[in-house]
Image (tube, rainbow, N blue to C red; front, side, top):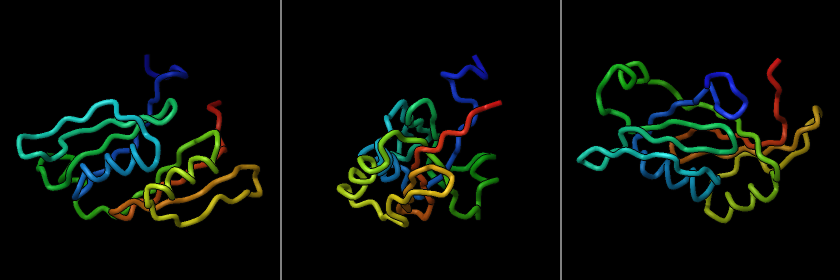
Length: 135
């Protein structure tokens, strides 16, 4: 049901030159759970859904054609923020998998503990304890 607390209603959506590598990095290095991955006959990722907590990101391969691919052509890197309970453990997992760390775990003035990582295509992934509430 749209709007329920258990089902997200906002899905960051990214296109990658190497979407298979993105799926590996996000699941193995950054702790996302693979929900669905649909591949074309040529092995490109047509559509993937990866979950973290009660949120989800969708991704696919660049240059497959279609309206979304056309609209995203030339788009720069994106930034995505993900709430995690244990920032330091999450950071250790990322480091163990060779993820590029842009900012180590840092206590913020507003009470959050965050770190930032860059994926293999320049997108910035921020992980922290700050969890804004709706309402």
